[in-house]
Length: 218
Figure 1 (tube, one colour):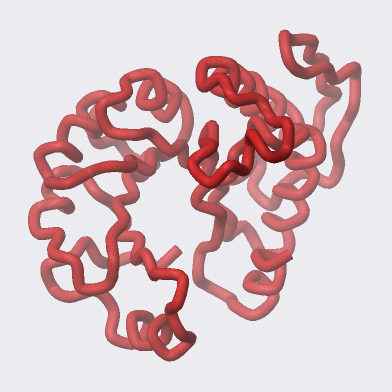
Figure 2: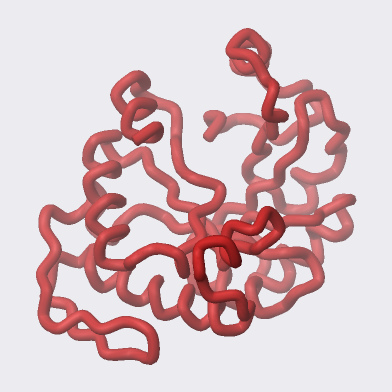
């Protein structure tokens, strides 16, 4: 709902969740929501996905799947359902976790192949990087220096057209060298107590000269 409000209040900024824990969602329902939001925003949506975690008790307190490997399998299968659903063709899927028997989900997203999907990956864990390489971008977590980002870029197949590498940090954080290591986006991370004025200041002033620049703030 918040993203829908943002879509209606903006015209050029890209928007998306960082990240949606897909194993907690019903893929068919999420496919419809993504298609609607992509159309509402005029093709400006960038869905970020991951397996989620139980650091705040969100999973254990609600009876969700706690096993990381199982959630990873659910994420892969869920992404297959999303991709198939966005084609506008009947979806025939019968997997370990999800079943879709011949549903056609319309309308399709604004972009024929669906919106680009960025996959979260914790640094040092190769499986999420392999997953990200199959999609449109990677959002590495736990990156502390450009050399680590360079390892991530190498693991996903190197820099290539259309594949995004999003790096995040607080306003004013030093990130010298990330662009050279392969970053295509700098994601400014704001603490919970951030005011609207704080955000507007970053949007107004833009990134310092040593940050990756040249694209909108997602």
